[in-house]
Image (cartoon, helix red, strand yellow):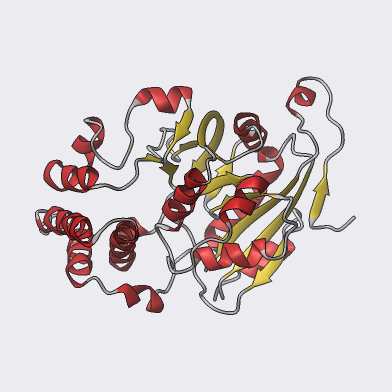
Length: 323
């Protein structure tokens, strides 16, 4: 058997109850100078994929200058490596992987700083019921539940966050971040979730198609999950499935903060008329402008929203391939 495809032995006892009907799963992670976090992800796959009968691990490398590729090649998980030869962006790297896998395979997209907990993906499958997209409960390194569920961007979310701040807007149910405890406890259909870990069914892949490569990094998952819902498929939050997310770089990178801001506005503009888009952008500008003294990130976001250079992503030096 090919080293990159793992066929698990039949399980007994309690594990047998979680064993899945034979399905093909492609596990894809995108790296860009990700050596500091990649081994931890790969180490977690055996436990996280427990109960999954057949899977292939694919590492797509966006021209890393560290030893990400060497780590992936040496790891006993037996990953298949795709080297794009350029810093192609997150969506383009995912597309490079999906172009090489069977259309009947489900897709698990993972950031390299994700750590799967035991049985995570079997639990996602149990919640997925074969169609749509499923996401797990994501926790931080401190064990706290990450508020990873989001509402579709709107004028209400933009202006609530601008005038009230993101934390208060979330608590009042007005912001893009969903803060209500019930959904994180009980799960169910959601609009979208941060894209650090997504289980995409083969049916969703067929109906939705490729990821939009015009979003170099950030908002690509918002766009993809909108198209999932438009295809009459569900995006499900499954709290029984657990993963740990170490965290993204945009918090400490003014450039990535600017890119996130640009793509947020660009995404909204694609789906709304000019007047609504102008009001959405103004809300972002007002919110960031009110917080200029808070930190460099807000100043970068403000300048990006005012200038709104759609070509911003072209020079991005993706720090670690994580969101």
